[in-house]
Image 1 (cartoon, rainbow, N blue to C red):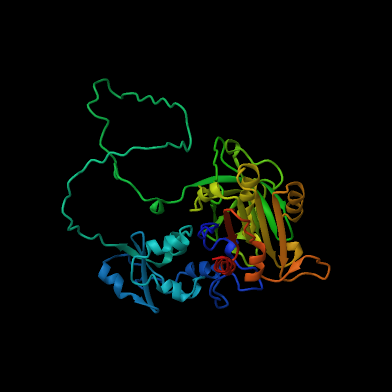
Image 2: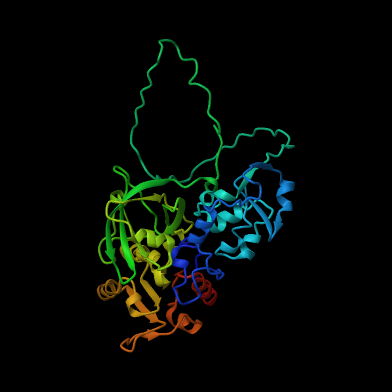
Length: 427
């Protein structure tokens, strides 16, 4: 039996899904020269009228929004706010075709599927046309029906103990009520509609992994503990040239061979980040000094460990920084899941010096018979004695040996082309 999870980690457009330089590029569609993120930031701050309304804000009806659905006149709506994205068309990393899917319509759901982490309010601030007009409701008032739910199991996410609140009266007397409910009282909000919550963290250490990758140790605010579940990611936010830029990263453990941190001691975050020569955000990170601050979000992601509970064999396919989500999976499988009898990692890189935590992986494989690692290089040196080439169906068939009676679980992470190719081969 072979289980393959959907592409739930890392986040779309994250560092792990970026193709290495010299290959297919950092974007799904090659952008014209002078159309990078920094170029867009400079262009949007140039003072030009990007809305076509000469500074006015208008209320947009659904009918009006639908009229602006062409390449040279493209409006879209995200969470009730309408933007003229025509000027942004040539700067969109996903290309014109992807952006046109949102033309003349409410694109909130489409946006959340691909870029929920992007701070569009800051990126498209100068493109804001106005707010969507409220639609009158024609729905009949329904009957209130009570529902009784029962829980078969209760899982405690966290416990805060006992809290005592003392409220003093300004004037003596009997309180007949505690006041009027605030707006949105007794209502629910979908998780995908909830804004990300950020904490102000401090960079306390920066350790070199190889020639272009570092482990950044971030300290959470005093008294704060944040457990990031395995397979989840966080978002880092920074102000670059007066524009908020956000990127997702998957935390790793402090090391690969030591004990896993206990969740109650997680006041620090470790992020393994590759610094790209043309990366706006990673170049900014690389200039930070010890003691500088950085905003870090709460954990996000859809990856679930539920299927791993029945797995006997864990196969990990990683390319480049797609290795980072695998770090904690390896730790989990070897230290906390007795049912997993074998964990195998197939690690693709360009050159030997690109292999992350090379010596640590070799040490772990030498000391734990349940772990096995294989390396494949696409541009090996003459001194390389290991395997070379790229991911192919035959390579995966050789790697994914399924013992009789086993339940296998496969995780793949890397550039988008890599994950799509490996998933297609395995399925």
